[in-house]
Amino acid sequence: MSKRILIICGDFVEDYEVMVPFQTLQTFGFQVDAVCPDKKPGDTVVTAIHDFEGHQTYSEKPGHNFAINADFAKAKAEDYDALLIPGGRAPEYLRLNEAVLKLVRDFDAAGKPIAAVCHGPQILAAAGVLEGHKVSCYPACSPEVKLAKGEYADIPIDGAVTDGNLVTAPAWPAHPAWLKQFVDLLESR
Image (cartoon, rainbow, N blue to C red; front, side, top):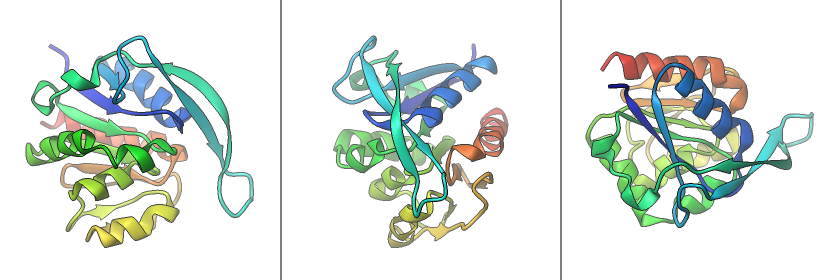
């Protein structure tokens, strides 16, 4: 049986950070379930495309509709081998959902691989699972990593860092490094 990966996403998730991992991980033969609180399989989340065009921060453009294929209310860490949290604006409000935070804590308590990119570590910080870990994220989220007693890894935008069960990266240009490290960690277990 193939390993199962859960992706937690929401409206205005970063387009590349949900679609590329969803498809790439399926290419490796993993079963990938994407969930969103208060949405059911077949519902969609709106995505946003964030780009780096020389401004003081990223720009945002409309993305695609991304179809949810599993039910958040039924998702349990015990049914999955790993968790992936994409960035974008979704993490800023998903981190306010206690059911999301409990699910993240359950994955972490079981020592299962957790991948988070860009603003995804905002959810990890709110869940209280960053203490003592070296963590990358979009630089604007670095204060949250530090406040959660994590060590902010200031790495190139196309880099990734693995520390224990966490695999993190600053943004979608890191997909090759981030997804490779995540798959390597997942397959080592």
